[in-house]
Image (tube, rainbow, N blue to C red; front, top):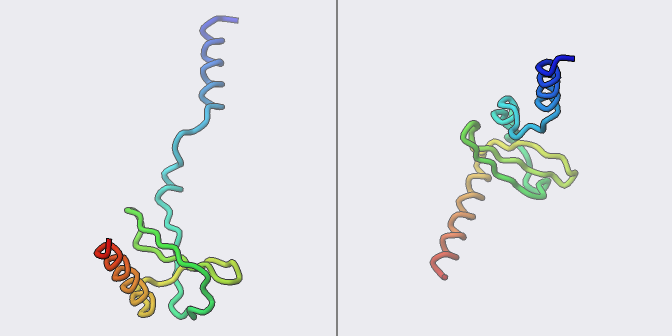
Length: 97
């Protein structure tokens, strides 16, 4: 076998089985929330998670008591009030320290 062919096969094998360093662009640019819920009672929510990425709008993910995750519309009135109260609480804590 020619050495050039052997070197080419070895190089292709290394490239094929080398681990990828980054995620494909299609996975990086995908937004978690594709649709949102407007009328979710707060008593069903166990925790809230906020995601702010450059490629997607502001996203709010609610984990329900049934362990299901749903996306909540960030424009819902009770959620806006919740975020305002959290920001005010953080400001008061900073001023107290």
